[in-house]
Length: 176
Image 1 (cartoon, rainbow, N blue to C red):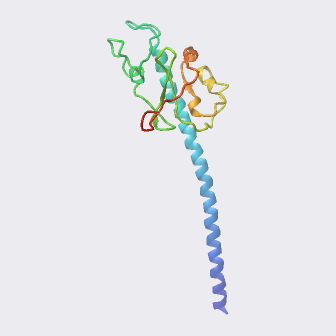
Image 2 (image 1 turned 60 degrees about the horizontal axis):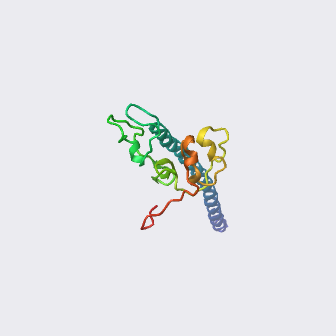
Image 3 (image 1 turned 120 degrees about the vertical axis):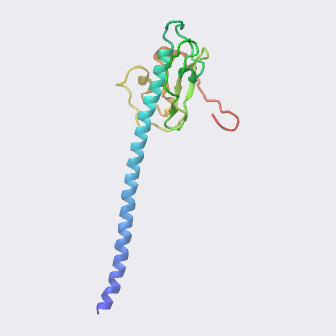
């Protein structure tokens, strides 16, 4: 009689173990979702910080200084590392930041007059943060944007110089 009850328990133990595995899988899935959201929020905050740093550097570049003309045009983003117009070493950025969403270079935004006036992400992902109404300056233009690539880090004084269609032209081999 005891042997008969042990056989019945082994089936129950197997079912209990399967239920435990299923419950753990569901819980790990939920944790993975929240971890993914936390990671995306951090990348988004980093995108706002890095884009803001480049935006500030472009604004400082445009300020007149000794031997530096007012409203000069940034030819390339690397010029923000060391100003080629000045005999003195002027640094507007410590380093060229990568886009934290794609881990690639930011897409430069060329103005109607040819110089770099800002940057944007190349990511077409939908951002978590879409409410920028309480923000000031250029960040207010990010309100209700559907993609990170629509967040244009351009000084407010240069917003009118963004060409109507800013598209990234891919290089041969598929690289933008």
